[in-house]
Length: 380
Image: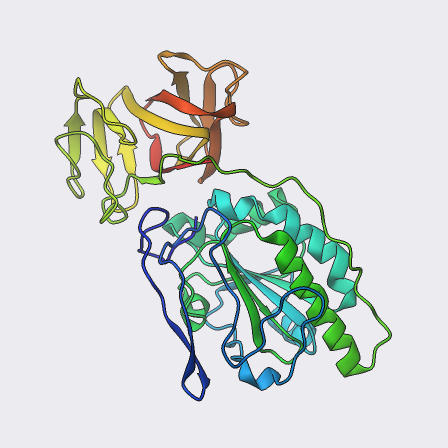
């Protein structure tokens, strides 16, 4: 997911202008998606500042780069304490990773972040995970701590539950990386997945620069982490939101009854289905960030194009049946959370319900039971 808290995640691209105070010169453009899914949405500081490219970059004046803002409004600390984190940040190259635990795009960056932490922590790199939630349930410290444990994140995590640090960085994306030199200047930013080699090269350059400045006999390993990264389809269905507050400007709800805030509505699936739109059958409660099934049985039908299908959902230990093109999903297409055509929904989190061998166009049907609550579809 890359987005600003209430802005478009994947589909709408706008322009954001960042001005660097170098005689009024330095304008940077990027997209306004809150959740960046693919590589290439990257800003490298240019103009009168120095662009870090390759191994031959020079650094004439770090003061030409903006200073990173302080961490502010932190609700909780994981794997660290305020005092310990402040001490660790001194003279370190810091990678600030903005993420939220139900975001599939964030989750897919974790292997690289963990590998960089293992490889460079003793060379002067400090990774700080800034958990800035999208949904209310992501503000619960217990939920975040379970996610940190599940994904094996050992570096410091700060809970930016009210987006104070997010706003201080003027961030608009999940995931987003801001890398500072050991003096605290932001030297590189990257939004979304991908560009891992370039990001790692910049980490190496800043670590070598730090070692020279501090008179340390340390050289960063110039090899690059080589992991399998996600390959995006030429076209895939955009992220789909079930909450009426979140669907503003990105409404893919196909039922003619539409969203009806805070009402329980009886929906019937129409005969003609439009691609990339979801349709409901049964009685569903319209909530600001989700829809909750209240009838004995309910159904979601979605014609989509993708390889993987994920849902952010919760429920009182309920189950859902997963059908693909009208038939129970087989092991060839079942996601990690689907067994024998059934997924068990309990805690608030991301569930992988479809994982096909290749991308394609299909019709997904989910049959749920009372208490099943769904926030979003995401794809890969």
